[in-house]
Amino acid sequence: MPSKFIFTNILGSYVFTENYKAVEEILFKDIGQFKEKGIYEDKLRQKHGNLAKPEDNDLHNILLFFKNRKYFPGFLKKNLELTKNSIKESVNNDLFIVQAAGAIGEIDKTLNLLTKRLREWYSLYNPEASDKIRDHEKFSSLIAKKSKKQLLDEFDIDEKDSIGSDLKEKDISAILSLAAQINSLYALRAHYENYLKELEKETCPNLAAILGVAMAAKLIEHTGSLKRLAEMPASTLQVLGAEKALFRHMRNKKNRPPKFGLIHEHQLIQKSKREMYGKVARALADKASIAARVDYFKGKFIGDKLKKELIEKFKIEY
Amino acid sequence: MPSKFIFTNILGSYVFTENYKAVEEILFKDIGQFKEKGIYEDKLRQKHGNLAKPEDNDLHNILLFFKNRKYFPGFLKKNLELTKNSIKESVNNDLFIVQAAGAIGEIDKTLNLLTKRLREWYSLYNPEASDKIRDHEKFSSLIAKKSKKQLLDEFDIDEKDSIGSDLKEKDISAILSLAAQINSLYALRAHYENYLKELEKETCPNLAAILGVAMAAKLIEHTGSLKRLAEMPASTLQVLGAEKALFRHMRNKKNRPPKFGLIHEHQLIQKSKREMYGKVARALADKASIAARVDYFKGKFIGDKLKKELIEKFKIEY
Image (tube, rainbow over all chains, first blue to last red):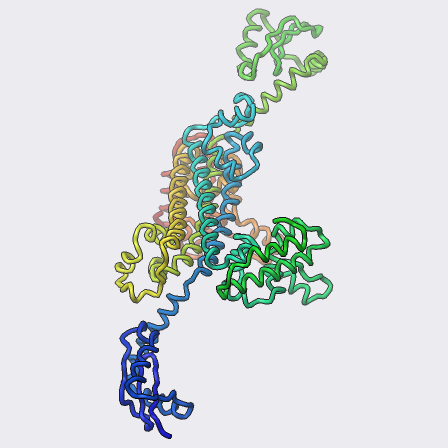
């Protein structure tokens, strides 16, 4: 029995006769209406009674209808809008996690570079402080806050016995400007760590519970998105970041396969015995993989349960 | 004719008889007195009349006098003080130039790293701005100052047409914190450039006149001190920084020797024709070498004269 068809594309919703003539159309003004096309299709259905979805053969003829040049500018404009819209909406928390984790990595590199310089430079003035304060962050913050005399007093060193030179005000100020910059980089790093924590609370609370905020971020950064991480076998997650060792093993069976990649620094692995490394890494990757999948599909929070299972299995607190 | 001797070491000034017995001594309280030993020797001379400096043979006997164990702690303590003092006084402007030039180099690396991150991150929000503003410093300072709307208005782009997403306040703030950090790194870099300029005004005004502040600093950083730079042949100065190419040439005569190293970026070379590179580099290195020597020996300012000679020889302004 020939009937009328309903057909919707980016331009609007149409009713076609069995001869493929358009008898009614609702044109979309913008992408917003296209996205709510159901509403407009329902309107047409109510008016025209039972409308069929076109089958392959009918579809072919209906598409020929749109081969008219007069529709081309509309298609171009609307498709461009649609693409822009998709790009806009593709931005999600994953991307922020990738960026923030990347920024932290780069700030770390920067801090390393600049702190080495600071220590060398400041040692012309007060070498004793650089010797006594081994921690980089503490060093940079202390020398910015305290005078040479105050620091030497703390180490019970007489200022006369110091082998550092007495510098001019402007020379000291040049050094302390670097210290101030480094301190503000540390503050920015702390800010990003906090930001990551908030992002992960929304995006991947389970993964963060199992691996910790920093490591979860690194895995997402490495794969590019939570989606890809969730789609991965647990055994791939286990060796993420150890690709070089893995492929060396695959080329050349003499080398053993790597036991872990990025998850290497996890407390559970660090605190276990060497001969257990492989077992622990496999279990950890299994749980992390489950967590990533639950997170990706917006499941409930089961992070504490998964973590507890790991702790009980290996009798290691973390 | 046997006579009395005068002998001074780090412990004090002594008068010895011809039998090498100490008849009088002025002990030094600290390194300051040792450094002004002339005063104390004069005092002894006035009292004892003509005192001879010991010859080799006498010296041998006098030194035996000090082989007594009772002097050892004194020697140890005073020598330690002397060494500390030398270390203290070894700090001079050269070292600050080395440090500041090094710091600028590291800040540049840092800026490269962080600006790449900033552009990528900010492009999630406002990709048009990153495309339109190619200069890194300008980019970072503009996005910190202006809102997305203000920037898009400047490029005549409707906010609706932008493919950037509308981010939450905290996501934008995370990005702009990085921009603020980058801006403050640029400010620190400018501060150090100024500082270098001041240092070079005192230390190597001639070298700075010929090569510019930044390049003069790089050469001093590369060699470690103005002294070493002044001691170098001009032909070595010419290829400083191109050691790899130079040694490749020396191992394997197939490769031509390098024409220049660090001085490559000098305007005089950049503005001359390719076939003149070698000539210009040699002349530039000659003048720079003269300048470095005049600077090291605290000679007069002849930088403008040397520069003028170069400009006239090659008819290139810089």
